[in-house]
Length: 350
Image (cartoon, rainbow, N blue to C red):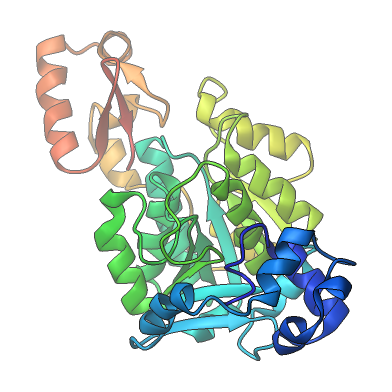
C-alpha cells in the first residue's frame, strides 16, 4: 500500500521496484542511491521516508470491513489470468466474492448509448452464459455494461465489475443499486486507490483488466470510436477470443461490431455459437428470437423488424392508419415488446 500511494509510482514502476529489490520491505530498506537505478530522485526520497501511515490508515479501516480485500501479485487469490497480460496491476482493491477472480469468465462489453435491443441482447447473453458457468466481466458503465451485469446476476455464476474509480465511489451514480447488488452477489474490482474520482484517462486503463480477467470477450454494440473496440483489441493482443454480434447496416451502433468481424472476430447470433467455439455443450438460447407466435398474430409486430422504424414507414408497410398504429404501439410498449426511440422511431425488441 505504501509503495502504491507514492506520487509517480504506477504499476510499471512498482513491478520494476519489486523485480529489482524483492519484497516491499526490501524496497524500503534500500538506500536512495541504489533506488536511483530504477526510479527518479523524488520517488527515491519518498521511499526513504517510509510508508505514509496517514495515507494508509483509511485503507486499513476499509479493509477491516467484511468482504473488502487487497490482493497483490504475491497472493494466491490474485487472478491467474492477469498474470498472462503484459502489465498486470501489482495490487487490486476487491469488494465481494474474492474467489470469483479465478472463476472461468467471459467479458461482455459495448456502447454506453445502447439501443433497447442491444440492452436486451446483452442481458440475455449474460444470463445464459452465467447459467453455463461463466462469470461475466464488464465495466459497470451505462448501457451494455449495466445490462450484462444485471443478466449475470440473474444467472448462476455471477459477475465482476472492473471500475475506473476507487471502490468507495460509485460511478455512474445511477448504478448505485447495481453496485450494491454486485458487492453482495458478485465482485467489484479496481486498481485505483480509495478516493480516486472518475477521470477520463482511468477508463482505458481499466479496460486491459476487463479483457485480461476474461477467457474471451463478446462485443454486443459499438460504434467505430467506441472504447469497447480498445478492449477488444487488448483482448486479441492478450490471446483471448473475440466475439461480436452483427446488427443493422444502417445503425452506427453496429458498425464497430461489423469492423471487428471484418478483422477476424467471430460472428455470433446465438449462445450456441459461443459455446460450440469454446467446446461447451450448447443451450437453447438464441438472440432476437422473441415470441415468434406473438409476432405472427400481431399485425404490427409482423411488419416490424429489429431495425428502428418511423410511424410513416410502419404505416406504409402495414397499411394501418396512424391513429390505429399509435394506439397499438403504445400497448406493445407497455408490454415490453416495442421501445420508443428518439426521433419518432420505434423498435421491436421481442
